[in-house]
Length: 415
Image 1 (cartoon, rainbow, N blue to C red):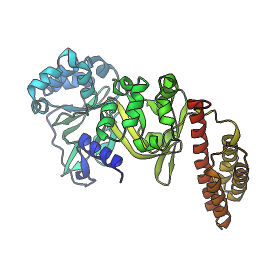
Image 2 (image 1 turned 180 degrees about the horizontal axis):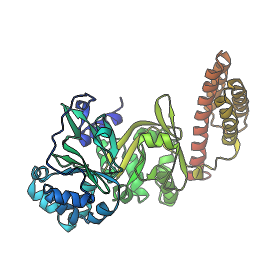
Image 3 (image 1 turned 180 degrees about the vertical axis):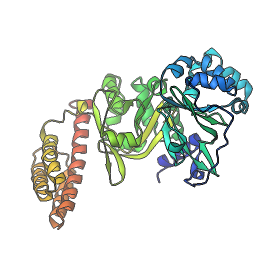
Image 4 (image 1 turned 120 degrees about the horizontal axis):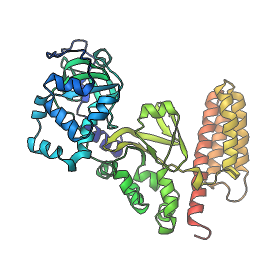
């Protein structure tokens, strides 16, 4: 496991505090409190009528969340009792209830609310839920008790007209670290942070919105062609750098499972990245995700091993890139329809054409790579494996060609 993955995993463990203690053990205990389980009132009214959520009601008022929670929904609310709030540092709690701390208070309270109705029967098997704060909570059984993160659920299925309440014995605390904070602490994203500063995007990564960031490691930036990073950081290339970085950012939280299901995601530079699952790993375009679902106060981070290159910076519709695009556009559907032999034939023709390209249309180091792939595919007796050998070579060539085009665009003639 890489240092980057280890760092992010450690952060995840600190944020969630659930760990391996949560299991699917069938025996569990729920302590029911003396409450009406079908009140005929909305969520806020039901909480007030119960008489044990006075601090929660005060906090909702201070956060200006009473109206949204009373009129919207349906919601599932994990409601801390007055005793749960009593476990907190009371001076810190009093400060959080002040108007100046409203954004943080809203974040904490939204961390207790999930859109949709989830009853006890939906939770005891263990699941992960995305809260209104954008961060996730984990529900499962630990030591014979149903818990949400580290908090014990003491009563369930208190119904309201716009949702359901589950009572918990500890206030849930979301992480306060922004995307920029966790990237800085991980220590593997110095180039990304420097680039964000040069492009004027640090505030974006530290702001109150909810984002998804595909974060290339320092090693990923180092693997770009020589001179690329230096060129990107020049003041005259600020807009191109901004476009490149925004191609790594999606509005709203997109977790790994969401990315796989969606197959694509529109980035903040206006172009879309492709998301796919290959050999058990998540890929964003041709970049492999090394660590996923790292949560921050303003979104989620996926660590990737390659810098993503948007079309707008590569002009990749001619020459070698177009040969590769055409081959994949024609070959992939044939492979998917069971005709691997036809796919292999198309890929072979494309690679032969690439090897024969004149001048510097193809980076020099790719010719032997493509030639070896062609020989390996022809020696392979399984057509599907041959197709994959050639496809991997085409993907590698495509990445190198687009990076070469980007470098030329950034550095300009004679640089």
